[in-house]
Length: 171
Image (cartoon, rainbow, N blue to C red; front, top):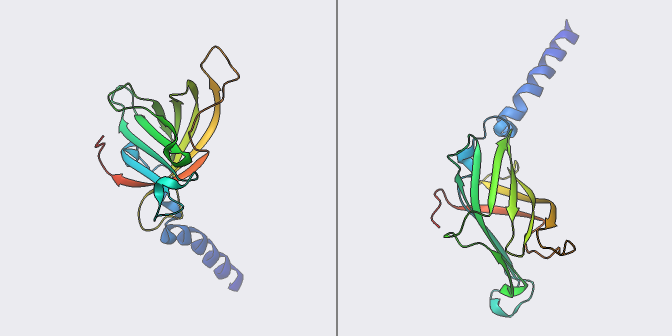
């Protein structure tokens, strides 16, 4: 009897702890609308002199639901590195530079850089973020769209944690 009670208690513990701790927030409960909005990351090494530092960088995404397909996103990106000396961005009056679809709790994106490089990335929510939604960007494979296939120049980050700036696409 004591073993049966211990096993039952263990099973209840295993089921309830992830739910209580919020680990079950991911998965099928994530919708495409959760990704819509403006997302931003910025690093400034010296706030007293932000224009003078070569390691300053920022990354911004504007994402909206793509009404032409279910569970699809489209959007625009803007990335700066080396204190703003290198820029990779698409103006919001241009066609979207990002297209993706939601599968499970992750959006799989295809991007086109202004440096004629295209590639793949994925977006998912940081399960450890407690205060506000944090979107993780992870760069995947990429290749040049130029005639010179050796070109690998782009300024999309490998991985960044972005904070939601706005729930609407106020580009």
